[in-house]
Image (cartoon, rainbow, N blue to C red; front, side, top):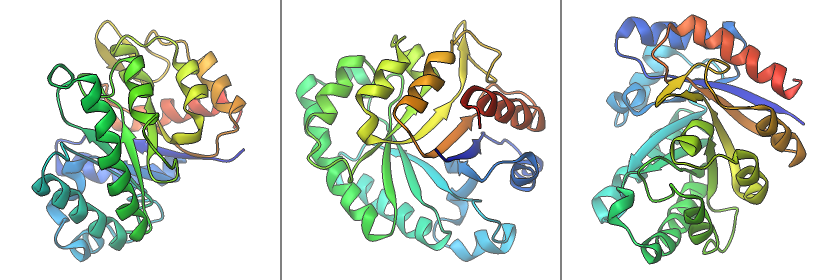
Length: 253
């Protein structure tokens, strides 16, 4: 099995962006999964992104995006991300469905599947894969939400799934391994982060038991992107080093 390790982290300053972009390869990662603020200023001018950062391999392996997809404007915004992604050699769009969970019904969740499948087909036309990021207080939050949504997907090739360990636990889903095994045909990406007392933590510093998580990843024979989604607020270099060490040790990579 081949794993492509990526790193993702919010940045608040230009100095932090420099540490992120110039540090991921040195730390041993194959790519970055960029937060919206890290690429949005260049959305209409992808060459400006290239001019600033050059073309290191994997610099924009995945782009994290978000919106409702409930109207034409939201769908057009995603299409613009597709165009940018194609210019900077991205492989995947990781999409957070920004609709509050309490505002949707079970039938809404089921019908969202058709929208995502159509947008997934459009992503393929740009050489991209659309991967839905489940999230606390978004439509795919509770365990049963996953069944409602993915039971309506006609072709797993059109819509992937990004598993986020901490958001599952925050949402009350404790059996992460079961979710991984059940939805293995859809999984295209992992966001690995720890969680404790309501806060995200560096991998290995929280309360999540990752042993069954790593075992499930191996059991489904997953090969692909596994990203440390480091949102603890700690120091960038420390997070890079500790997260990669934790993931490699857990997966025997």
